Image 1 (cartoon, rainbow, N blue to C red):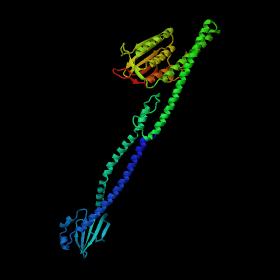
Image 2: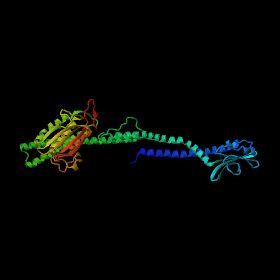
Image 3: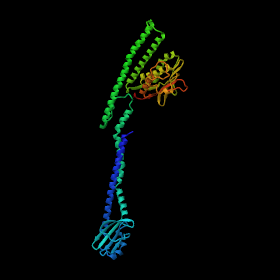
Image 4: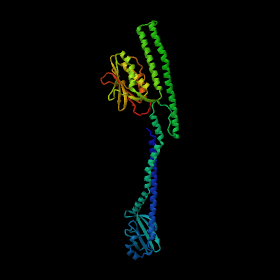
Length: 454
């Protein structure tokens, strides 16, 4: 994966490092050459500054005493007009006088820098080991490089800071999009000014979101309108079928009439679920979640389905799991109607798939992650391979019996997502029945404010 940040940092740091190496080499060479010229000037200054009145015998006699004219880096030889040596410093070269000026010679596997100067009545020759000159020149040149060595890490730190600040709007846009819910299709808005370079991207993104919002709204409107338009004539058709059965105007076998009525009931149920799904999809993602008593919703749902459970001799009940108290209201942030739809769909599925004389329980729980509830039944359960797919729209398991459209769990999953919760299905450990868990729902704390639906 290509990273603009790594690409910028890599090339900028590499460029600064390469430029620093070239600049450092140029500075080093310049400083080295200037140091060599300085040492040449030193040889010239030593030669010019020697006392002019040196006699051969006095100079030779005073040689040891005049050793202070040089040090261990410089060797000095002085000859008179007749070519007689009148002065030689300690450690000097044992060579004949050379021509005037500067030159580099080799003696005893060692290079020397020699300067010759002719004055009236004498010839002066000053020499210095090249190794000493190089060591001193290197030390002086390296001293000129330390500011560059300090500048390089400071430059790298500055590049890191500038690139990080420069790419901050892109990271802000990425975070803004990653934290959005799937239904949030409103335009992207920055808290501050948008960089000129990002304006085309933001405009194109907002245009895409606008078109997606229009398409999604059109789809939701179509499903809602279609479901609404289909529900009335289907209900009327069922009423007419029942009336015809009562007055005897409908002629046909009983099995045929029951089959027609069963298919009609299934179509009506499908239309009702489509309408419910369309309403849930049409809910605004910014709807405020208010404190609601989950226990009251569960009690109402159990009461509403009690007759249906009695018709199948199913034991339907409501339980509170420890450590919650029996009088706990289980207040959570949510939408009462949406939570009722969620629980009603789970109970409807559980009762439909639980055989007669079975059991269905709604269990309220309170834990560290928040409030949750479970719907447990003693039905046939779901094949493990299908557990991950049963919440898909219009999906029905291969062994599913009875009426159904495959939308009940999809609606439940949709409502749970709006409450930032998850629907989890698992077969019971005893091998009979299914447990559907909805968690976590955010509990209401004292002094808490309203939150927004995701």
